[in-house]
Amino acid sequence: MTIVVVVLIFSFFLESIISNFIPLDTNLFVPLFTLISLIIIYPYFNGEKTNYLKVCAGIGFLYDVVFTDTLMMNLVLFVLLGLFICFLNQLFSNNVFSVILISVVIIFLYRVMEYGILCLSGLFAFHMERLWESIFSSLLLNLFYVSIVYLITDFFAKKYHIRKID
Amino acid sequence: MYRKNKLEKKYMILIVVVIVAIVLGMITNIVRTERELSPIEKSIKDTVLLANKVVYAPIKFVKDKITEYQEKQDLYEKYKKLEKKVKETELINAERLELKKEVEDMKKTLELNHVLGESSYLNATVVNRNLGYWYNTITIDKGEKNGVKKDMAVIVSEGLVGKVIKTTAFNSTVKLLTSDDANNKISVKIQVGDQYVYGLLSGYNKKNRTFSIEGISTNMKIPKGSIVTTTGMGDIFPSGIMIGKVKSIKTDNFDLAKTVIVEGTVDYDDLNYVTVLKRKDETK
Image (cartoon, rainbow over all chains, first blue to last red; front, side, top):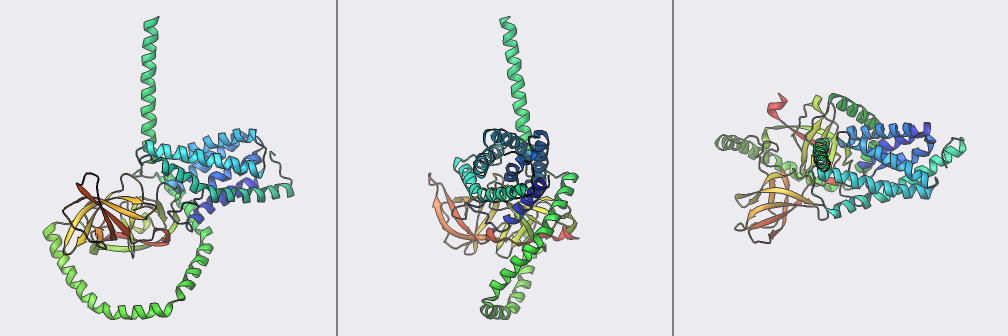
């Protein structure tokens, strides 16, 4: 569980800190570390889906309150994506390539659902180009992050014999 | 039997419509930018952002030192420029006093609500930027305890940054002028000689980093490089805050109105410190 707590807290704060170094109009480096950390931590729950989804809800709620000022939008989205991560992990074995693949799917789904909600609420007019832009701009940095963090956590898990789904 | 099924189908449609309406209503409420944060949300946000500030402090220290070092590189040139400016200050000061008097007189005549000269300044540090991607917001480390209130204007020395949309005790969220938000329109004026042309700043082009002003009459000739500032109408932004300079002018498809493309003066990528404009009546 230590790995789970460390990865979540580290990703949450790093996302906030890194935002100060990234241009607002960037088309490449949009951080989504908190969401991505949900993919890293899943194997450490060893199939305890309820506990995993509770963590997803908790971190989603914090994301809402601290970063986006929305009312439970990220809480719901993080839980839904948590369910999807559970499903995808049943299809793939846990290695760096499958983690990258799952990350691409999760980023895609998150951006589509988030933009869908914002457009439905009338906050933005729907532009397909804008949606694609948001997805592609989130890929590079987050895939790099997920690979690095996966390799580090995997190293520690093996070193200290921490049980996880492989 | 057939009639009963038809009736049930009608009820089902009605229920679905009601559910869809409720869900849409909830969605609108979820993302509403004017939503007031609950006391629990405010305290959680303040606590987490305090922790964030502590974690960020050493990184920020190093970042500031690097910036300081880079700025020191051309120190002599800057010193010479400043020396020249200092000599001009006395003259500007005398002019300022004269203008202040004129503004007071004109305010009475025009019944203006709020002008720039009536504001006091509160400096703040940017804690995080545009998390959530779509919202184009920044979080600053000054909140209700420092007298920050919703709808206060936020500026940097180059011009207008945005407005405060949410406040907690120690932090505030600022919506940037670059936001795609459909409600993010502000009244601006373009200085053409001694006259002003009024319009609505309505969109930001991410690629070209320009704003557009719509609804300008085709009769008006607006030279490139004209200065665009806020009008002071609408009770949020004081009059005279710099937005940018006219880059180009386009005529719409029906040849009825002009769209003015404005190059912003503020570098939104480099927002580390900002200033909140507190109205003097609210600082008392």
